[in-house]
Image 1 (tube, one colour):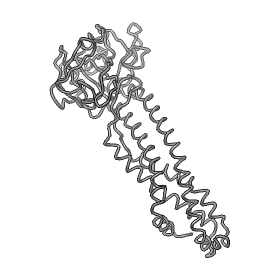
Image 2 (cartoon, one colour):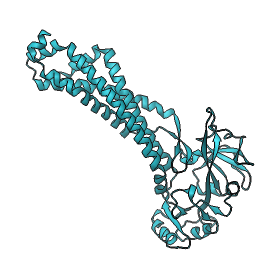
Image 3 (cartoon, helix red, strand yellow):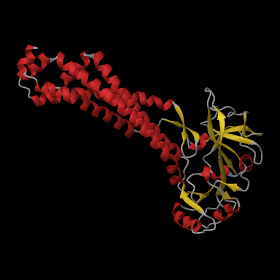
Image 4 (spheres, one colour):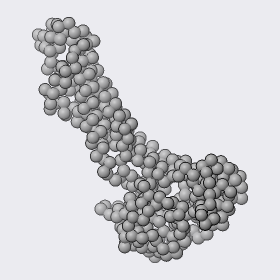
Length: 388
């Protein structure tokens, strides 16, 4: 076999060509890895909103809180189920909430976008202990005060402490605090008093969903049966994790499909570039190839050597692309969630699996792009090569 040092020396000698080809492959890896990181962030962001012992109750036939409606008197019926956990004060551990969307001007652009508002009861922080007020103070129950999620603070007009905006015409509310929830999708929402939000959207006497903390995750099946078998209620029960997985599905599939499509087009160009580079390299190294053949190296050795060189080149491009993609972790990216038609802020979240897969994709492109040039080198006549 031809020593690997021979291939590494050739790549080092041709610095400009090597870097140009590796840069093209790196661009493909950058796009591919970034798409996977964003899709991963969509799953994780919505997944962080879910708790294993919490069940979501919505109107049967609804696929999201936004289009669901539950009568207020049904909240007590749902939370009276024996499977629902009790708080220290003896009250059922659950909340009824209302969800809506409204338009706001985006800062830094001339556009507008939907923002999701959640009407919550005064004991919402007891139900969601992971939510923390990180700036300002909580909104006072029964008032026109709201708190905004950390992810969208300052991204829209009026969404900063001391700012104000209208939920509906002549229904202004004031921002008094900012909350965080470990990077969950709640950080892309505005929270206000449930009665205030209901009045603004003209939905008095109803909520969008009921969330109930069960005494144990194993109680879910019994809780689901007791609610769904009551035909008078007409409600549907889902685990919170299943609910958010369903909410993320459309957005994740769209982002992944678009990103992969772009990466495929880029990869074709990158493989053509790698192929041209390897063909040019072979044309300039005909005498070297002839010498190698004269020294007794087989055609298979020549083929393997040039394929390894192409794979090394692709590996370098893959590493460069992954390093560039890691820098995207500092970027916040907002897109419309297809389930709620509101804007959610995501980051690019890498995993070791995504990085390894991205490098393997690059090496696969190097293998495909270098195969025909390597085959050409292996078939080259040693006598003709040395004459060239």
